[in-house]
Image (cartoon, rainbow, N blue to C red; front, side, top):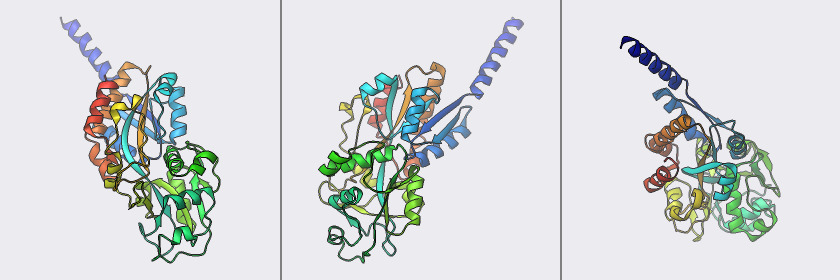
Length: 331
């Protein structure tokens, strides 16, 4: 009896040791990086499982999960169900957030500049090149817009944020759709590139007369001015958690195979027009024990982590969607 007890105790100790060494590695988009960094740090302090997170961009994250060099990946450029199956991956939404348009115009504060759908698309097409163009001044009669060159800033890397932004431009401009299209990496008509969201913000901050796009939290942290953007109903909307939530209010997740959903240019007077969903990808052939540790972590993110997400200006997934994820992915 004593021998059995010793053996059982040793086995338990070995099991505890293995659990203590569990490490989950993720490579993800920069769009949700602020909240993912907060989550991984806090979660790693609360138990034996350590979570590592590298903000490498959606394209790099997708490549790494396909290659099996990480345990999970994050992307803002979702895969359709057939693409998930072909790659042996499972996908589920993690958070909602907003892509905002940032500008560096001395003397013009955040939300003072109003950009129509036409003006925004033509700036990125290279057709509007100065800030005092009539298509900009017409909707901004009270602003002193300079007769200076517009420096367009965009992402240099494969980016889910770019997918969200170019998907929006494709919906509001037939010319953009036919000449450029939507994607994580496109042939930009004009502009200088920045690496990941911080790179775009840094370029805009340094260059007077510049315009760029980034996830909202980066704009807030960098104290950059955001433009009010015309939405589908013709209203000029300011970026905040409420307008992001409004654009997601009518999302039909029940009819979204593989949880594929794009929330740009949604209807509603209060809807922010460039709202995005950021996703997690896991391998179907993941080690069962490690998979369970990942599920524990993601459940923690959906519950305990929701408060941190809101503080960082992201929108947690609604409970009904979390319930769907639990039933379809976490089973």
